[in-house]
Length: 377
Image (tube, rainbow, N blue to C red; front, side, top):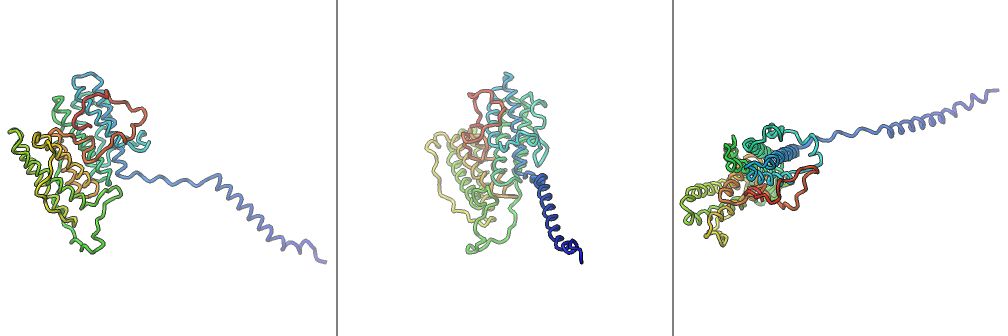
């Protein structure tokens, strides 16, 4: 007679395998649950984000240095306080994620060395040092705007332009030498680059396209607006010249020539972008008080061109953006020359009441009733 246990062994083998497999599955599942997979490393911040963080950090450093100077009670404090107000508004406009308060905020500008490294307390106890630091920061912001994306480029360009203007005004108010390198910040772009022939209007590819998610208009639309703004400014100068004081005729004549050149350059770039300039208007409506106070009226016309160039900066790339950056700085300087306010971020309309508050722990400006320069609202 055969052993019954030998007969049952083959039948038990599949069952044992099933039990063993179940045990292995349970053990593996517990291991995965107790040892979750590591999360992938976060993507490095983009150039635009690094440029914004550097601009915020340096603006806060400059603001702290300015507040220290203003609180010292020196004779220059009256001239420094409007700069602190300007930097406060700019810092609010540049503020971003909570990480700005951490070490990452001290990273250098993506296109160069941290202009405000070591601020405050690194020799910025004098107006001359603050003047130079403002110029360095403004130059770095404009340089970063050459590469940043869309709306961030406009924000950086306006921030840098206002800091450069504030540097010059502070130097004049305190009697210190003009900042080094300030005169070379308005570089000229090269001639319009050759492009492929423009497509037919019936071609779907001829539809206007923006250059990034933050673009508010196409390059063609922005350049067309710049042409109109320049033509209107030139018309205003022609109307103002016979009514200006003799000392102002020379600068006004030079500015008129510049506006005519800028209008022609904008038209050339518009055609290169496959746009069609609108026919020049025979005249433009001027403010009621323009003829009575032509200098103030010219300041308003200059300030009105800033938004157009801010749009071009935001939607363009390459030589068109370089040209718009130079034009933005020149227009802001001319507006200031006539006593107009180019704003805390020239080229960008800001609702200051809607800006986020500064991070907790940031000191407040010296006085809420401090007189403001034309570079601050």
